[in-house]
Each structure stands twice: as C-alpha cells, then as structure tokens.
Image 1 (cartoon, one colour):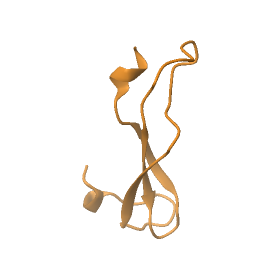
Image 2: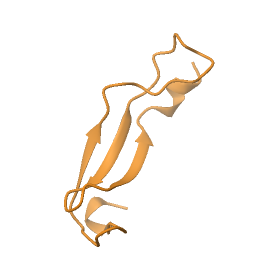
Image 3: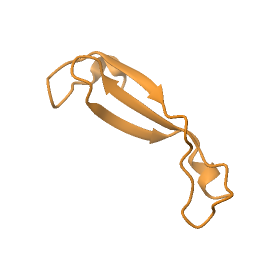
Amino acid sequence: MSNKEMKCQSCGGNSFVQAMDYINLRPVDKKMSIGSERVYTVCLDCGEVVSIKVKNPEKLLK
C-alpha cells in the first residue's frame, strides 16, 4: 500500500512521512549484533505512528 492509499485510523488524515530511528534494533541474545534500522510511517496531521518496519530483517539473524 503506498502512502497515498493510506488513511490514519486516529484522525482520518492521508499525509504521511517516513522517518528512521538512530538506534538499531538487535536480537536480545546477541548484544554485539549490528542489527537493523527501524522505519516509521508517521501521520503528518496528528503525529500517530501508523507503521514500524525493520529495514533489513536479515541482519537480526546474524
């Protein structure tokens, strides 16, 4: 689903932006793992985070 087809369930808005966190997600049992970035899809009308996605999920296995 593209950002233009999405609709915020909190406010009904349809303007979104993607943002990344600067701290990587990593497996609990692998403290030295590099991990992967998270990509957030945020409603520009109300600030609701409508989606969180791991950019490179394969990095969680290493």
